[in-house]
Image (cartoon, rainbow, N blue to C red; front, side, top):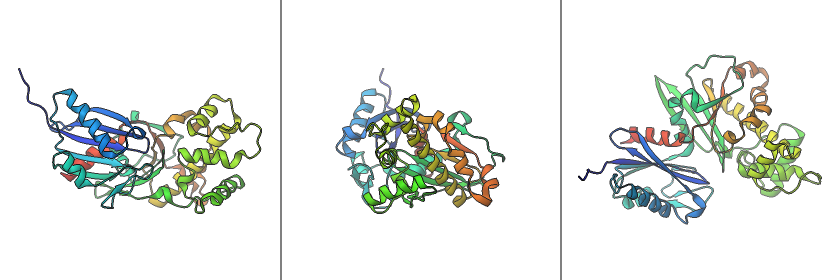
Length: 328
């Protein structure tokens, strides 16, 4: 007996490292399956979509093409041509719509999608970092997350409805606060000219901190990628790598605190992205929370604000689903 095939929506979370595609049951609005692809293995955005559609077809009980699609992407989404910040992919909405059978296609910034997911997260979906002295009142939220790049967004409560503000906050200026950080700034300024926060708070940023401070240190053994530095710090085998990660989280604390002040994010600051969830133990031991609260006359204000690490890997998919539900 042949069953009729089911309708579905395409939800996607496209980062600098991985591209995740999800099948959402069109009627139930439930995500049924998520596929993950390495960005480096595909020459173009269209080629990774081809791979996903092929995998969906292999399941046999979904229609060949989705009814609608929403792509959460790590780049600016306002231009007619969507160009990814950290790889060579590019596409247009009309191009992808035609490829998928002339369907509705929406594209949102990756940290807009994370922001949209925040109201739907349960306590098990995030890790509470430190202790806030205030109540977790449902006011404004801020989201910041280092990964391949640095994402920033906000969530505002207005007349009982949450509204998202997205931008390119990862590219604001880096503001050093001590001699060590000024040394990092000078190293990067000599190398790049302008020093954005993303030059520090990203996978590449960890390597930049390492390079800036290694100098003639005897224990700087030439580890030149973020994963190796993180592993050496976690294992305790390299004190310098541990120092690098501590500096990274200290600067993240200051940046998260600045964002909380700017947005009035008294409902909480959420740490997303691919790096922070991997190093929870190191984050707990770092100066993150003290630097977050260290805002002079506003220290008491900051102490009331919760900070949480988003642990749920499909958060951006949830946000893309929310966006699609209000767009179609």
